[in-house]
Image: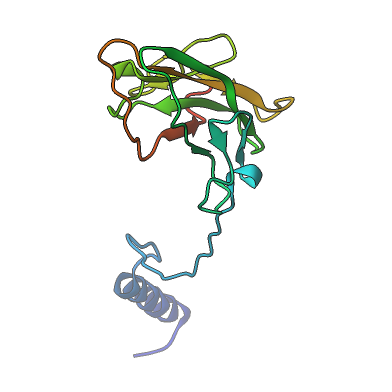
Length: 177
């Protein structure tokens, strides 16, 4: 077979086409790779969402030494409504606007009528799921901390017991709703 330009081009074209078919197009459908990640936490006083105690019912040094906001009140009157307003402040120091509320978890919070968390206007900020309920909007450019109050209602048959945790939620999706 004689080597001419046509045969060389056909041969190179066949090699390229065959190589492309054998090796694929360079696209892939999956990659799994291990990478190291370092995460650190900080106390509530220096996090992106900062909490500070402003009354005797709340503290940031409640025995655990972790700098987290803690609530502890053991001297409430029976058959009374006790309001701590403000009980603590919340401040958005992150770069995104957020909506802040307390998540209803079914253990003595708001729906049972025993403990409620309120904004500066006295509106409840407790929600089962955020669906347009009351909240506190905390823009990233907020001028400073916002007060949050706690109302404890021991009237009638309400019995206050231990609540292990309260979930405080700050969500970019909830802001402005």
